[in-house]
Image 1: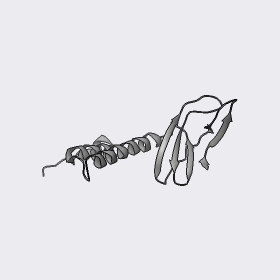
Image 2: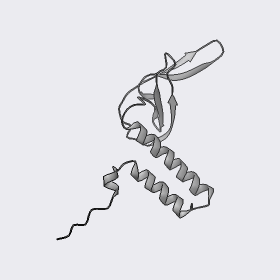
Image 3: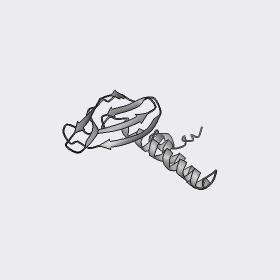
Image 4: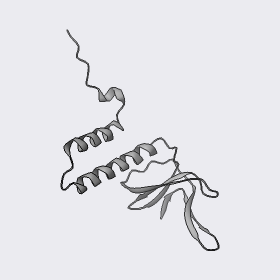
Length: 120
């Protein structure tokens, strides 16, 4: 099922594959399970194909929210692999560094700094 954009099946003599032929900029609000970056090869267009529980979404790779979703998913995957590969908990410093990296995706540099103290 494709919820946004168009996914087409391309047939050749000995092979077939699916690709996005149109994309949308609409932001996905449900949890993302995975993604694939698709390069243009007509009739296929540049796209990020996000997988969710309800299906596949063909998204414009240049949409402003796409990079943050990809980085957040990649960081969550790394954190999950670190915590599962080292037992029930990963190394505390590694987990903290990954959490800080994840938070920094959504904050500007000014928001990450503590508030300035003013003297009366």
